[in-house]
Image 1: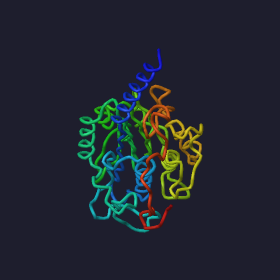
Image 2 (image 1 turned 90 degrees about the vertical axis):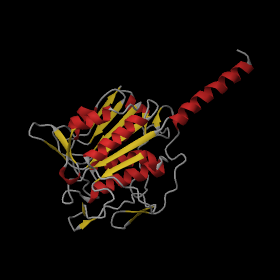
Image 3 (image 1 turned 120 degrees about the horizontal axis):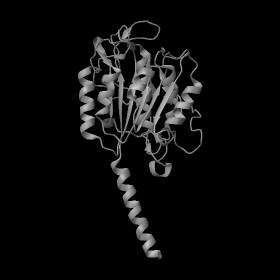
Image 4 (image 1 turned 30 degrees about the vertical axis):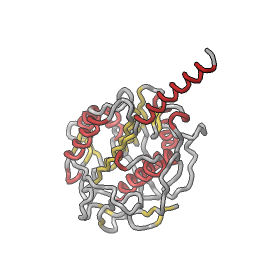
Length: 310
């Protein structure tokens, strides 16, 4: 092949790759049911807010591609128990300190159904979905795990799997923080999915001992962000390639998990966990690195107005 033909072939390849990257998109659904204000602990809001800031500011994911379903949504009524059971508060709708409301939807069966119907009609095999679930789960009288949604509504692992099954994304990453998370992981596993759970099918999950977050999901979010909630760096990029795969994030979270729970990873195919990042699946040169084109992060405050950083 002469030089001219080589150049033409390279141009065509670049156009194809560029078109694919332009069409591919990452979407996220964040689920925190709450059950009621007596059970909706402050740490669940913190878990979701930390992830939201990570997606927006570290991965430059647009707000339109992130769906937050949390407790009573943007209802101004009190819906949250402050850490230490010191009182109640209304969940702030500003999760990233940007001064604008980010949270609108209550975590109800109807809103979950509507969300997955919208994603089912819009996502294609070129897209990636992150499903992040925290808050309470229990086992019913038949031994099946279910999530508590807002105002005492319930959603079984089977029902959640059916909703997720309607979405035709090319790859799906699922992070599960509730008790019995392993039971949900078993229901949600499938081709093109990486499922990470805080604990086994019959185990309880735990909060952090030293901060108002949940243990496994806190360390997982630190891993993908490559920094903690205050902006201090963490060494989660094990191979130093500038990207944090789902395998690296899971390993980091498992290694730093100090509570009596056994995190679980299910990947199909097995290699997908090492390929998939929150920017997509592929090589760093094709996908980009953590922090590329990130939105500048201003001062961040927790639910009580305490400054976290930077």
